Image (cartoon, rainbow, N blue to C red; front, side):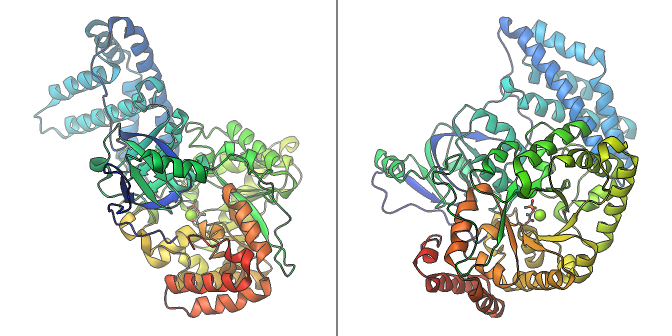
Length: 601
Ligand code: PEP
Ligand code: MG
């Protein structure tokens, strides 16, 4: 995406002295008016150190719940550790699990709450630092390791406490202000009915943006020094459409926004008007990207032709609290297939790793470049027993509910598709005949988001049953632009001619091998990118539900036969900005209905 420039400055037209307008990158649409609440996602916080005598038992219950949560997390972390993980990483987890079962330690913490009226966080911190002090000053390597384990345990317990409802210091109806925010924190905090979110770091192409959009929480990213500029308690207006953070909005400004009525509604005000067929009669399939269970109810009202991308790492892990239990997965996929109806669902296998690593970040195993690390299908093949096999079994068990396709994330080589296919066949054979169904074949698609996969799309199209281009990651890797780094966010664009060349290559390879090619990255929802993608030979799009109506309207307004000429112009253009300019001119030439859909005309 090409975000607006991220300079910060005063709006000269501001009608009252206190109102300030900060320019930001719009990462999830909508408008929110509320009170700023600062949030520190970086480390554990003990928000208060003491409690009233009558709060003692509630605080002990809070501690016990946090211990249970931390134990559950450790189990999941263990399951997600790649096979290549170091022994130290596993030992660190084992040591923490042991401490969490150590009744003597837990009783000491509880006593501190009961007798000294310490908050659960303060008690955990005090007991563990006393332990550490007893070991302090020693050069003994064993004791050094033990001290590391205690720090890791403290972090985990304090985080678990912070995620407990009572310990969370976020008011309902707040606008969250943070330096950075993991997407999973946003999921948890959204239960507190967050109105909006503003971060200093991050980009419009990050998982945070995907989740914010799914939750319909307006999100601004790339606001320099936002923590200094907007203290907690400040009234703010978040304009996630135009990329503006208005601090101390005047009543005039609020009224202007209220009249504009630009807040997203759950269901569309007007139902879809007609099928997604271009003005010259070419049908394009338009499916929905789903990341959260509650989005399933949007499929029918927005007229989605099924699910084109179910991001299971968000759908399973984000909302429901880190559960990969096979039975729970079966239920989750059945619900998705029921909602998708006859058009069916495309379920992407876990894309854990990259910018979204909730369970690993505090376990001691670090990757210097996680986006290039053990991510997606690499991770699945690294730990087939823990991740891949249970997920495939659950999919086989759920698939009697409707047409199902399975999509592999971060594929580099066709061999990865073949290996997953072989594992799927094994799991099918192992399942009892009554649950597995007669057909052992599962349509397997490959995400094309690694340049090597696009460059050898002909071989990939032979190995896979369909290809889905992930333009968010593909642009990141082709342009060497970290999609989570705001400093280079303006350089991230799927409309760059180099990215488009690869899309063209993939579309041609798909056609030659009779292997359908679709696009499920954010570019599929970009009005200026869609005609270019069609001109390059893409036949199906998958977009977040709120974009479905706009994309359908766009298709109805343009002539498919004119798109190849635009695509040729785009491929020959010097850069992404020139492609965008060509696309805007082209849309204007298509006529009023197409021109009216141009963003920020
Ligand atoms: C992509 O990379 O374009 C994509 C659709 O996957 P994700 O955004 O989940 O990485
Ligand atoms: Mg991707």
